[in-house]
Image 1 (tube, helix red, strand yellow):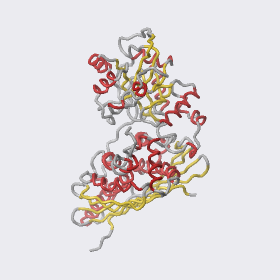
Image 2 (spheres, each protein chain N blue to C red; image 1 turned 180 degrees about the vertical axis):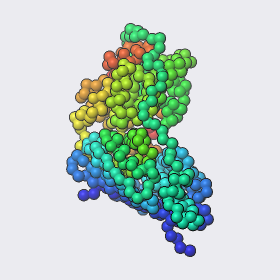
Image 3 (spheres, rainbow over the protein chains, first blue to last red; image 1 turned 90 degrees about the horizontal axis):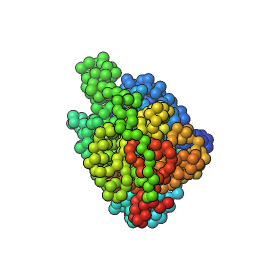
Image 4 (cartoon, rainbow over the protein chains, first blue to last red; image 1 turned 30 degrees about the horizontal axis):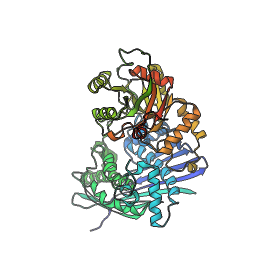
Length: 164
Length: 391
Protein backbone atom coordinates (compact mmCIF):
# COMPACT_ATOMS: atom_id res chain seq x y z
CA UNK A 1 0.00 0.00 0.00
CA UNK A 2 1.38 3.40 -0.92
CA UNK A 3 1.54 6.13 1.66
CA UNK A 4 0.80 9.15 -0.48
CA UNK A 5 0.30 12.35 1.41
CA UNK A 6 -3.26 13.63 1.45
CA UNK A 7 -2.09 17.01 2.69
CA UNK A 8 1.18 18.91 3.13
CA UNK A 9 2.06 22.22 4.73
CA UNK A 10 5.20 24.34 4.86
CA UNK A 11 5.32 27.48 6.98
CA UNK A 12 8.55 29.42 6.94
CA UNK A 13 9.44 32.54 8.90
CA UNK A 14 12.59 34.53 8.29
CA UNK A 15 13.92 37.57 10.11
CA UNK A 16 16.42 40.06 8.80
CA UNK A 17 17.83 43.18 10.43
CA UNK A 18 18.21 45.67 7.61
CA UNK A 19 19.68 48.51 9.68
CA UNK A 20 20.26 49.47 13.29
CA UNK A 21 16.67 50.53 13.77
CA UNK A 22 14.71 48.14 11.56
CA UNK A 23 13.94 44.44 11.49
CA UNK A 24 11.89 42.78 8.76
CA UNK A 25 10.06 39.54 9.50
CA UNK A 26 8.23 37.52 6.86
CA UNK A 27 6.06 34.45 7.31
CA UNK A 28 5.04 32.43 4.28
CA UNK A 29 2.49 29.65 4.37
CA UNK A 30 2.16 27.15 1.55
CA UNK A 31 -0.07 24.16 1.94
CA UNK A 32 -2.48 22.05 -0.05
CA UNK A 33 -5.08 24.80 0.10
CA UNK A 34 -3.39 28.09 0.74
CA UNK A 35 -0.50 30.26 -0.35
CA UNK A 36 -0.18 33.33 1.85
CA UNK A 37 2.47 35.69 3.09
CA UNK A 38 2.74 38.48 5.66
CA UNK A 39 5.66 40.84 6.20
CA UNK A 40 6.07 43.16 9.14
CA UNK A 41 8.59 45.96 9.46
CA UNK A 42 9.60 46.39 13.12
CA UNK A 43 11.06 49.54 14.59
CA UNK A 44 13.86 49.24 17.17
CA UNK A 45 14.36 49.79 20.02
CA UNK A 46 10.62 50.10 20.64
CA UNK A 47 9.96 46.70 19.02
CA UNK A 48 6.88 48.27 17.46
CA UNK A 49 5.30 47.16 14.22
CA UNK A 50 5.82 50.12 11.91
CA UNK A 51 4.18 48.59 8.86
CA UNK A 52 2.58 45.32 7.79
CA UNK A 53 1.56 43.96 4.43
CA UNK A 54 0.49 40.62 3.02
CA UNK A 55 -1.13 38.63 0.27
CA UNK A 56 -3.41 35.62 0.04
CA UNK A 57 -3.07 33.68 -3.17
CA UNK A 58 -4.62 30.41 -4.25
CA UNK A 59 -7.52 29.09 -2.22
CA UNK A 60 -7.87 30.19 1.34
CA UNK A 61 -10.92 30.65 3.50
CA UNK A 62 -13.23 33.14 1.76
CA UNK A 63 -12.87 35.51 4.65
CA UNK A 64 -9.14 35.76 3.87
CA UNK A 65 -9.32 36.90 0.28
CA UNK A 66 -9.40 40.61 1.17
CA UNK A 67 -8.05 40.21 4.68
CA UNK A 68 -4.61 41.63 4.02
CA UNK A 69 -6.17 45.10 3.94
CA UNK A 70 -6.71 44.76 7.66
CA UNK A 71 -3.00 44.67 8.34
CA UNK A 72 -2.65 48.44 8.50
CA UNK A 73 -4.61 48.22 11.75
CA UNK A 74 -1.69 46.64 13.62
CA UNK A 75 0.79 49.44 12.95
CA UNK A 76 2.03 50.68 16.31
CA UNK A 77 1.51 47.41 18.19
CA UNK A 78 4.48 46.49 20.32
CA UNK A 79 5.95 43.00 20.08
CA UNK A 80 6.01 41.48 23.53
CA UNK A 81 3.82 40.24 26.34
CA UNK A 82 0.12 40.59 25.60
CA UNK A 83 0.60 41.10 21.86
CA UNK A 84 -1.52 38.12 20.83
CA UNK A 85 -4.64 39.53 22.47
CA UNK A 86 -4.07 42.94 20.89
CA UNK A 87 -3.33 41.56 17.40
CA UNK A 88 -6.36 39.25 17.43
CA UNK A 89 -8.56 42.01 18.82
CA UNK A 90 -7.52 44.58 16.24
CA UNK A 91 -7.69 42.26 13.24
CA UNK A 92 -10.90 40.71 14.52
CA UNK A 93 -12.63 44.08 14.20
CA UNK A 94 -12.21 43.91 10.43
CA UNK A 95 -11.85 40.30 9.35
CA UNK A 96 -12.82 36.75 10.31
CA UNK A 97 -9.63 35.45 8.71
CA UNK A 98 -7.89 33.64 11.57
CA UNK A 99 -4.92 32.74 9.39
CA UNK A 100 -4.00 36.40 9.03
CA UNK A 101 -3.50 36.73 12.79
CA UNK A 102 -1.51 33.48 12.85
CA UNK A 103 0.86 34.78 10.16
CA UNK A 104 1.38 38.05 12.06
CA UNK A 105 2.00 36.19 15.32
CA UNK A 106 4.56 33.93 13.64
CA UNK A 107 6.35 37.02 12.32
CA UNK A 108 6.40 38.51 15.82
CA UNK A 109 7.61 35.28 17.44
CA UNK A 110 10.36 35.17 14.83
CA UNK A 111 11.57 38.61 15.94
CA UNK A 112 11.58 37.57 19.60
CA UNK A 113 13.41 34.33 18.80
CA UNK A 114 15.97 36.21 16.71
CA UNK A 115 17.00 38.21 19.77
CA UNK A 116 16.71 35.15 22.01
CA UNK A 117 19.15 33.35 19.72
CA UNK A 118 21.73 36.07 20.27
CA UNK A 119 21.36 35.68 24.03
CA UNK A 120 21.64 31.89 23.79
CA UNK A 121 24.91 32.25 21.90
CA UNK A 122 26.44 33.14 25.27
CA UNK A 123 25.45 29.81 26.91
CA UNK A 124 28.59 27.93 28.03
CA UNK A 125 29.22 24.46 26.61
CA UNK A 126 30.09 23.06 30.03
CA UNK A 127 26.93 21.52 31.55
CA UNK A 128 27.49 22.89 35.06
CA UNK A 129 28.06 26.36 33.69
CA UNK A 130 25.06 25.98 31.42
CA UNK A 131 22.90 25.22 34.45
CA UNK A 132 24.25 28.30 36.21
CA UNK A 133 23.56 30.45 33.15
CA UNK A 134 19.90 29.42 32.96
CA UNK A 135 19.46 29.56 36.75
CA UNK A 136 20.63 33.17 36.69
CA UNK A 137 18.33 33.89 33.77
CA UNK A 138 15.35 32.60 35.78
CA UNK A 139 16.37 34.53 38.88
CA UNK A 140 16.45 37.70 36.83
CA UNK A 141 13.15 36.89 35.13
CA UNK A 142 11.17 34.87 37.64
CA UNK A 143 8.21 34.58 35.24
CA UNK A 144 10.23 31.84 33.56
CA UNK A 145 10.02 29.68 36.69
CA UNK A 146 7.77 26.70 35.94
CA UNK A 147 7.09 28.02 32.43
CA UNK A 148 8.21 24.75 30.82
CA UNK A 149 9.55 21.31 31.82
CA UNK A 150 13.19 22.44 31.86
CA UNK A 151 12.39 25.26 34.29
CA UNK A 152 9.94 23.31 36.47
CA UNK A 153 10.53 22.07 40.02
CA UNK A 154 12.61 18.89 39.83
CA UNK A 155 14.87 20.24 37.11
CA UNK A 156 18.45 20.89 38.29
CA UNK A 157 18.25 24.34 36.71
CA UNK A 158 15.77 25.63 39.30
CA UNK A 159 17.34 23.90 42.31
CA UNK A 160 17.56 26.41 45.14
CA UNK A 161 15.39 29.01 43.42
CA UNK A 162 12.34 30.06 45.40
CA UNK A 163 9.06 29.92 43.45
CA UNK A 164 7.57 33.34 42.74
CA UNK B 1 22.16 38.63 6.46
CA UNK B 2 19.38 36.45 7.81
CA UNK B 3 19.07 36.83 11.58
CA UNK B 4 16.70 33.94 12.19
CA UNK B 5 14.69 31.36 10.31
CA UNK B 6 12.02 28.88 11.37
CA UNK B 7 10.45 26.27 9.15
CA UNK B 8 7.52 24.10 10.10
CA UNK B 9 6.59 21.14 7.92
CA UNK B 10 3.43 19.08 8.30
CA UNK B 11 2.77 15.89 6.32
CA UNK B 12 -0.51 14.02 6.62
CA UNK B 13 -1.36 10.49 5.54
CA UNK B 14 -4.85 8.96 5.44
CA UNK B 15 -4.54 5.61 7.24
CA UNK B 16 -7.75 4.29 5.68
CA UNK B 17 -9.20 3.30 9.07
CA UNK B 18 -10.86 6.62 9.82
CA UNK B 19 -7.65 8.01 11.28
CA UNK B 20 -4.87 10.16 9.92
CA UNK B 21 -1.20 10.23 10.83
CA UNK B 22 0.33 13.66 11.11
CA UNK B 23 4.07 14.17 11.09
CA UNK B 24 5.31 17.61 12.12
CA UNK B 25 8.78 19.11 12.09
CA UNK B 26 9.84 22.42 13.62
CA UNK B 27 13.35 23.42 12.66
CA UNK B 28 14.94 26.78 13.41
CA UNK B 29 18.21 28.30 14.59
CA UNK B 30 17.53 27.19 18.17
CA UNK B 31 15.29 24.13 18.08
CA UNK B 32 14.62 21.04 16.05
CA UNK B 33 11.68 18.98 17.24
CA UNK B 34 9.46 16.40 15.61
CA UNK B 35 6.10 14.92 16.52
CA UNK B 36 3.84 12.15 15.23
CA UNK B 37 0.14 12.33 15.94
CA UNK B 38 -2.77 9.99 15.24
CA UNK B 39 -6.09 11.82 14.95
CA UNK B 40 -9.54 10.28 14.61
CA UNK B 41 -11.49 11.58 11.63
CA UNK B 42 -14.90 11.00 13.26
CA UNK B 43 -14.40 12.45 16.71
CA UNK B 44 -11.50 14.76 15.74
CA UNK B 45 -9.61 13.89 18.90
CA UNK B 46 -5.90 13.25 19.37
CA UNK B 47 -5.52 9.48 19.85
CA UNK B 48 -1.75 9.19 20.16
CA UNK B 49 1.30 11.42 20.15
CA UNK B 50 5.05 10.94 20.20
CA UNK B 51 7.77 13.52 20.12
CA UNK B 52 11.51 13.90 20.04
CA UNK B 53 14.20 16.53 20.30
CA UNK B 54 17.02 16.81 17.80
CA UNK B 55 18.33 20.19 18.98
CA UNK B 56 17.25 22.23 21.99
CA UNK B 57 17.97 25.28 24.06
CA UNK B 58 19.46 23.39 27.03
CA UNK B 59 20.12 19.86 28.24
CA UNK B 60 17.03 19.80 30.47
CA UNK B 61 14.64 20.34 27.55
CA UNK B 62 14.45 16.53 27.24
CA UNK B 63 12.18 16.63 30.32
CA UNK B 64 9.45 17.97 28.05
CA UNK B 65 8.87 14.71 26.18
CA UNK B 66 6.64 12.80 28.66
CA UNK B 67 4.35 15.79 29.10
CA UNK B 68 3.34 16.05 25.46
CA UNK B 69 1.04 13.06 26.10
CA UNK B 70 -1.22 15.50 27.91
CA UNK B 71 -2.54 16.38 24.45
CA UNK B 72 -4.09 12.91 24.02
CA UNK B 73 -7.89 13.03 24.18
CA UNK B 74 -8.19 16.71 23.34
CA UNK B 75 -10.55 17.42 20.44
CA UNK B 76 -8.91 19.51 17.78
CA UNK B 77 -12.09 21.35 16.78
CA UNK B 78 -13.21 22.37 20.25
CA UNK B 79 -13.40 26.00 21.19
CA UNK B 80 -10.29 27.14 22.98
CA UNK B 81 -8.20 24.27 21.58
CA UNK B 82 -5.05 26.38 21.21
CA UNK B 83 -5.39 27.77 24.72
CA UNK B 84 -5.78 24.25 26.11
CA UNK B 85 -2.69 23.01 24.31
CA UNK B 86 -0.69 26.05 25.43
CA UNK B 87 -1.85 25.51 29.00
CA UNK B 88 -1.57 21.71 29.30
CA UNK B 89 1.39 21.10 27.01
CA UNK B 90 3.06 24.50 26.60
CA UNK B 91 3.66 25.25 30.25
CA UNK B 92 4.21 21.67 31.44
CA UNK B 93 6.21 20.45 28.48
CA UNK B 94 7.54 23.09 26.11
CA UNK B 95 5.92 26.04 24.31
CA UNK B 96 7.59 25.01 21.06
CA UNK B 97 6.05 21.54 21.19
CA UNK B 98 2.72 23.23 21.85
CA UNK B 99 3.28 25.48 18.85
CA UNK B 100 3.98 22.48 16.62
CA UNK B 101 0.98 20.52 17.92
CA UNK B 102 -1.32 23.47 17.18
CA UNK B 103 0.17 23.78 13.68
CA UNK B 104 -0.29 20.05 13.03
CA UNK B 105 -3.86 20.01 14.29
CA UNK B 106 -4.80 23.07 12.24
CA UNK B 107 -3.41 21.29 9.21
CA UNK B 108 -5.29 18.12 10.21
CA UNK B 109 -8.61 19.97 10.14
CA UNK B 110 -7.80 21.18 6.63
CA UNK B 111 -6.73 17.67 5.61
CA UNK B 112 -9.98 16.09 6.80
CA UNK B 113 -11.85 18.70 4.78
CA UNK B 114 -9.75 17.88 1.72
CA UNK B 115 -10.45 14.15 2.21
CA UNK B 116 -14.18 14.89 2.40
CA UNK B 117 -13.91 16.86 -0.81
CA UNK B 118 -12.06 14.06 -2.58
CA UNK B 119 -14.75 11.58 -1.49
CA UNK B 120 -17.57 13.88 -2.64
CA UNK B 121 -15.89 14.37 -6.00
CA UNK B 122 -16.14 10.64 -6.75
CA UNK B 123 -19.89 11.08 -7.01
CA UNK B 124 -19.77 14.59 -8.41
CA UNK B 125 -16.64 14.97 -10.56
CA UNK B 126 -17.49 18.58 -11.40
CA UNK B 127 -17.53 19.65 -7.75
CA UNK B 128 -15.13 22.49 -7.00
CA UNK B 129 -13.43 22.75 -3.62
CA UNK B 130 -14.75 26.27 -3.03
CA UNK B 131 -18.32 25.06 -3.50
CA UNK B 132 -17.76 22.04 -1.28
CA UNK B 133 -16.14 23.92 1.55
CA UNK B 134 -18.66 26.75 1.59
CA UNK B 135 -21.38 24.14 2.22
CA UNK B 136 -19.38 22.21 4.78
CA UNK B 137 -19.27 22.64 8.53
CA UNK B 138 -15.61 23.42 8.86
CA UNK B 139 -15.81 26.18 6.31
CA UNK B 140 -18.63 27.96 8.06
CA UNK B 141 -17.49 31.45 8.92
CA UNK B 142 -16.94 31.90 12.62
CA UNK B 143 -19.34 34.19 14.43
CA UNK B 144 -17.92 37.62 14.21
CA UNK B 145 -17.71 39.31 17.56
CA UNK B 146 -17.55 43.04 17.45
CA UNK B 147 -14.43 44.37 19.06
CA UNK B 148 -15.56 47.93 18.92
CA UNK B 149 -15.91 49.55 22.28
CA UNK B 150 -19.43 49.15 23.56
CA UNK B 151 -20.82 51.59 26.04
CA UNK B 152 -23.31 50.20 28.50
CA UNK B 153 -25.43 52.31 30.79
CA UNK B 154 -23.33 51.90 33.87
CA UNK B 155 -23.00 54.63 36.48
CA UNK B 156 -20.67 57.39 35.36
CA UNK B 157 -19.75 58.46 38.84
CA UNK B 158 -19.96 56.89 42.25
CA UNK B 159 -23.48 57.66 43.43
CA UNK B 160 -24.09 59.44 46.67
CA UNK B 161 -20.56 60.58 47.42
CA UNK B 162 -19.09 64.03 47.38
CA UNK B 163 -15.44 64.89 47.52
CA UNK B 164 -15.11 64.65 51.27
CA UNK B 165 -12.06 66.41 52.65
CA UNK B 166 -9.18 64.00 52.89
CA UNK B 167 -7.90 63.42 56.37
CA UNK B 168 -4.18 63.21 56.88
CA UNK B 169 -3.09 59.91 58.32
CA UNK B 170 0.34 59.45 59.83
CA UNK B 171 0.90 55.87 58.71
CA UNK B 172 -0.25 56.36 55.19
CA UNK B 173 -3.10 54.64 53.42
CA UNK B 174 -2.17 51.43 51.64
CA UNK B 175 -4.15 50.50 48.55
CA UNK B 176 -3.48 47.57 46.25
CA UNK B 177 -4.48 49.40 43.08
CA UNK B 178 -4.29 46.46 40.70
CA UNK B 179 -5.88 43.03 41.21
CA UNK B 180 -7.94 40.46 39.36
CA UNK B 181 -10.66 38.14 40.57
CA UNK B 182 -12.28 35.07 39.06
CA UNK B 183 -14.60 34.84 37.15
CA UNK B 184 -14.55 38.55 36.20
CA UNK B 185 -11.00 37.93 34.97
CA UNK B 186 -10.75 34.45 33.49
CA UNK B 187 -6.98 34.48 33.98
CA UNK B 188 -7.35 34.80 37.75
CA UNK B 189 -7.67 31.93 40.20
CA UNK B 190 -8.70 34.12 43.12
CA UNK B 191 -12.24 34.35 44.43
CA UNK B 192 -13.20 37.96 45.21
CA UNK B 193 -14.06 37.24 48.86
CA UNK B 194 -10.73 35.48 49.41
CA UNK B 195 -8.86 38.42 47.87
CA UNK B 196 -10.50 40.87 50.22
CA UNK B 197 -10.01 38.64 53.27
CA UNK B 198 -6.32 38.32 52.42
CA UNK B 199 -5.94 42.08 51.94
CA UNK B 200 -7.57 42.67 55.30
CA UNK B 201 -5.45 40.00 56.98
CA UNK B 202 -2.15 41.41 55.80
CA UNK B 203 -3.09 44.90 56.90
CA UNK B 204 -3.92 46.75 53.71
CA UNK B 205 -6.37 49.64 53.99
CA UNK B 206 -8.16 49.08 50.70
CA UNK B 207 -8.15 47.22 47.43
CA UNK B 208 -9.16 48.29 43.97
CA UNK B 209 -10.78 45.74 41.65
CA UNK B 210 -9.30 46.10 38.18
CA UNK B 211 -10.61 43.12 36.29
CA UNK B 212 -9.88 42.99 32.56
CA UNK B 213 -12.42 44.99 30.56
CA UNK B 214 -14.96 44.43 33.31
CA UNK B 215 -17.02 47.00 35.15
CA UNK B 216 -18.07 46.12 38.68
CA UNK B 217 -21.47 47.56 39.55
CA UNK B 218 -21.58 50.06 42.37
CA UNK B 219 -24.08 47.86 44.21
CA UNK B 220 -21.83 44.81 44.08
CA UNK B 221 -18.88 46.80 45.40
CA UNK B 222 -21.03 48.28 48.20
CA UNK B 223 -22.17 44.76 49.12
CA UNK B 224 -18.55 43.60 49.31
CA UNK B 225 -17.62 46.55 51.50
CA UNK B 226 -20.48 45.81 53.89
CA UNK B 227 -19.83 42.09 53.92
CA UNK B 228 -16.15 42.40 54.78
CA UNK B 229 -16.08 45.72 56.63
CA UNK B 230 -13.29 46.73 54.29
CA UNK B 231 -12.75 49.48 51.76
CA UNK B 232 -13.15 48.31 48.16
CA UNK B 233 -12.78 50.53 45.09
CA UNK B 234 -13.46 49.75 41.50
CA UNK B 235 -11.33 50.40 38.46
CA UNK B 236 -10.81 48.62 35.18
CA UNK B 237 -7.81 47.28 33.27
CA UNK B 238 -8.57 48.05 29.65
CA UNK B 239 -6.56 46.65 26.75
CA UNK B 240 -5.69 49.26 24.13
CA UNK B 241 -3.74 49.02 20.92
CA UNK B 242 -0.81 50.42 22.91
CA UNK B 243 -1.03 48.06 25.88
CA UNK B 244 -3.00 47.77 29.11
CA UNK B 245 -4.34 50.80 30.97
CA UNK B 246 -5.65 51.02 34.52
CA UNK B 247 -8.64 53.33 34.45
CA UNK B 248 -10.39 54.90 37.44
CA UNK B 249 -13.54 57.03 37.54
CA UNK B 250 -14.70 56.00 34.08
CA UNK B 251 -17.23 53.21 34.19
CA UNK B 252 -18.08 52.50 30.59
CA UNK B 253 -17.91 48.82 29.73
CA UNK B 254 -15.28 48.77 26.99
CA UNK B 255 -15.08 45.49 25.07
CA UNK B 256 -12.39 44.39 22.64
CA UNK B 257 -9.29 46.42 21.87
CA UNK B 258 -9.78 50.17 21.98
CA UNK B 259 -7.58 52.80 20.40
CA UNK B 260 -5.56 54.54 23.13
CA UNK B 261 -6.60 58.01 21.95
CA UNK B 262 -10.27 57.01 22.03
CA UNK B 263 -9.89 55.70 25.58
CA UNK B 264 -8.14 58.92 26.60
CA UNK B 265 -11.16 60.88 25.35
CA UNK B 266 -13.56 58.68 27.33
CA UNK B 267 -11.50 59.04 30.48
CA UNK B 268 -11.25 62.81 30.14
CA UNK B 269 -14.97 63.14 29.46
CA UNK B 270 -15.70 61.18 32.64
CA UNK B 271 -13.17 63.14 34.70
CA UNK B 272 -11.27 59.92 35.32
CA UNK B 273 -7.64 58.93 35.66
CA UNK B 274 -5.52 56.62 33.48
CA UNK B 275 -2.34 54.76 34.43
CA UNK B 276 -0.05 52.85 32.05
CA UNK B 277 -0.07 49.33 33.53
CA UNK B 278 3.21 47.37 33.61
CA UNK B 279 4.52 49.58 30.78
CA UNK B 280 7.70 47.58 30.20
CA UNK B 281 6.40 44.05 30.82
CA UNK B 282 8.50 41.70 28.75
CA UNK B 283 10.39 44.63 27.31
CA UNK B 284 13.69 43.68 28.84
CA UNK B 285 13.72 39.98 28.04
CA UNK B 286 16.84 40.66 26.03
CA UNK B 287 19.64 42.96 27.04
CA UNK B 288 18.55 46.51 26.40
CA UNK B 289 21.80 46.93 24.48
CA UNK B 290 20.61 44.26 22.04
CA UNK B 291 17.78 46.43 20.83
CA UNK B 292 19.31 49.75 21.77
CA UNK B 293 16.68 50.74 24.36
CA UNK B 294 17.48 53.62 26.70
CA UNK B 295 15.42 55.55 29.23
CA UNK B 296 15.59 58.61 26.98
CA UNK B 297 14.28 56.69 24.00
CA UNK B 298 11.55 55.07 26.08
CA UNK B 299 10.41 58.50 27.27
CA UNK B 300 9.69 59.43 23.68
CA UNK B 301 7.09 56.69 23.24
CA UNK B 302 3.80 58.41 22.31
CA UNK B 303 1.84 56.18 24.67
CA UNK B 304 3.26 57.98 27.69
CA UNK B 305 1.97 61.35 26.47
CA UNK B 306 -1.57 60.02 26.88
CA UNK B 307 -1.46 58.75 30.46
CA UNK B 308 -1.79 60.46 33.83
CA UNK B 309 0.61 58.16 35.69
CA UNK B 310 2.75 55.08 35.30
CA UNK B 311 2.69 51.82 37.27
CA UNK B 312 6.32 51.36 38.28
CA UNK B 313 5.86 48.55 40.80
CA UNK B 314 3.89 45.69 39.34
CA UNK B 315 3.93 42.22 40.88
CA UNK B 316 4.03 40.40 37.57
CA UNK B 317 7.08 41.92 35.97
CA UNK B 318 10.76 41.64 36.69
CA UNK B 319 12.68 43.98 38.92
CA UNK B 320 14.69 45.43 36.01
CA UNK B 321 11.42 46.13 34.17
CA UNK B 322 9.98 47.88 37.23
CA UNK B 323 13.24 49.80 37.74
CA UNK B 324 13.22 50.86 34.12
CA UNK B 325 9.61 52.06 34.40
CA UNK B 326 10.52 54.05 37.51
CA UNK B 327 13.34 55.77 35.65
CA UNK B 328 11.09 56.63 32.72
CA UNK B 329 8.33 57.94 35.03
CA UNK B 330 10.84 60.04 36.94
CA UNK B 331 12.30 61.38 33.71
CA UNK B 332 8.85 62.37 32.51
CA UNK B 333 7.77 63.65 35.92
CA UNK B 334 4.79 61.33 35.82
CA UNK B 335 3.24 60.16 39.12
CA UNK B 336 4.15 56.56 39.94
CA UNK B 337 1.89 53.86 41.39
CA UNK B 338 2.24 50.28 42.62
CA UNK B 339 -0.09 47.31 42.50
CA UNK B 340 0.21 43.57 42.92
CA UNK B 341 -1.57 42.65 39.66
CA UNK B 342 -2.76 39.75 41.81
CA UNK B 343 -4.16 36.76 39.97
CA UNK B 344 -3.86 34.50 43.02
CA UNK B 345 -4.39 35.01 46.74
CA UNK B 346 -0.68 34.79 47.49
CA UNK B 347 -0.04 37.76 45.19
CA UNK B 348 -2.18 40.23 47.13
CA UNK B 349 -0.31 43.25 48.44
CA UNK B 350 3.04 42.41 46.91
CA UNK B 351 3.12 46.03 45.78
CA UNK B 352 0.81 48.83 46.83
CA UNK B 353 0.29 52.55 46.45
CA UNK B 354 0.70 54.48 49.68
CA UNK B 355 -1.44 57.62 49.86
CA UNK B 356 -0.84 60.35 52.39
CA UNK B 357 -4.52 60.59 53.15
CA UNK B 358 -7.37 58.28 53.97
CA UNK B 359 -9.62 57.66 50.99
CA UNK B 360 -13.32 57.41 51.65
CA UNK B 361 -14.83 56.52 48.29
CA UNK B 362 -14.27 56.12 44.59
CA UNK B 363 -14.51 59.81 43.86
CA UNK B 364 -11.92 60.54 46.55
CA UNK B 365 -9.66 57.94 44.97
CA UNK B 366 -9.70 59.77 41.64
CA UNK B 367 -9.15 63.09 43.41
CA UNK B 368 -6.21 61.64 45.34
CA UNK B 369 -4.70 60.12 42.19
CA UNK B 370 -4.91 63.48 40.45
CA UNK B 371 -3.28 65.23 43.41
CA UNK B 372 -0.29 62.96 43.02
CA UNK B 373 0.47 62.71 46.73
CA UNK B 374 1.37 59.04 46.88
CA UNK B 375 4.20 56.57 46.41
CA UNK B 376 4.52 53.01 45.18
CA UNK B 377 5.69 50.58 47.88
CA UNK B 378 7.05 47.07 48.23
CA UNK B 379 4.47 46.18 50.83
CA UNK B 380 5.29 42.52 51.50
CA UNK B 381 8.91 43.30 52.10
CA UNK B 382 8.08 46.03 54.57
CA UNK B 383 5.46 43.89 56.26
CA UNK B 384 8.03 41.20 56.91
CA UNK B 385 10.31 43.83 58.41
CA UNK B 386 7.48 45.12 60.56
CA UNK B 387 7.61 48.61 59.12
CA UNK B 388 4.80 49.41 56.80
CA UNK B 389 5.69 52.90 55.82
CA UNK B 390 9.41 52.85 55.29
CA UNK B 391 10.76 54.64 52.29
